[in-house]
Image (cartoon, rainbow over all chains, first blue to last red; front, side, top):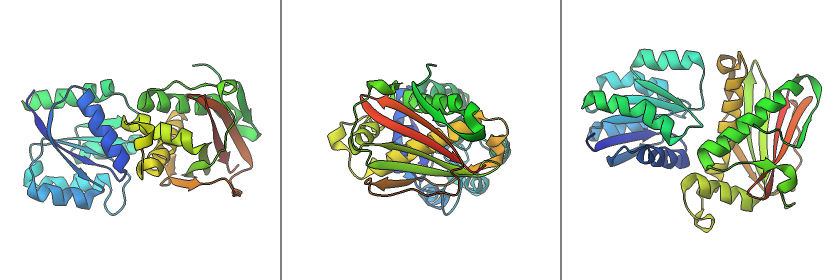
Length: 128
Length: 160
């Protein structure tokens, strides 16, 4: 698996760090990690930087994760990115909505590095 | 999963006590790599940190976690993989996220609540010179457990 660039979107700075740590513990090599506190900040990051992986919360202020994923279709720097939702919001309707908007996976908090590996690695392998 | 020795419940939601306990244990095991122990393994200390998350929809109420500031710092340090003395402004963010994950994990285990109940953003209170009054306290579940020797109290107040 090649080293990848990731964007982590969560309104909790602590959770962004935890997600990054879990991804690294899962054996996924990250060459660069961008962080954003909501969908608007994430779109601003993507305006300047291409990424391979986007890990996104759903419940966030300003622009939530579902609206952000909806807007990704028009973002050139996200065309090759695998989008995985990571959230406490585990309702079936949100899962269905996220997948229909283009997300490739869904991880519920709390999670283990093993669960992160299980959900993310196949997506990156397919890309490679 | 073991059952906590000190679990109390009033009203019609007593059957949820084991589910709340499992939800709590899972968050600590998966996110903090820490196994909660029975309450009699905890030292009494000031319960001067409180985090709260509101629930609305099919279930209306408040879930709260109380512990000492030392215990909250230890939780944050374990979440972030740093020493407790290195924990700074992220303390409230981390403590609030723990409460948020317990609330989310709990509601996702109750049939029908996953879609029918939303969570508020977490609120964290420092200090213990306050009284909490909620209209959602007709039924209360309370679980006392030990986290690394520190007492933690998790309460779910439900509007019946």
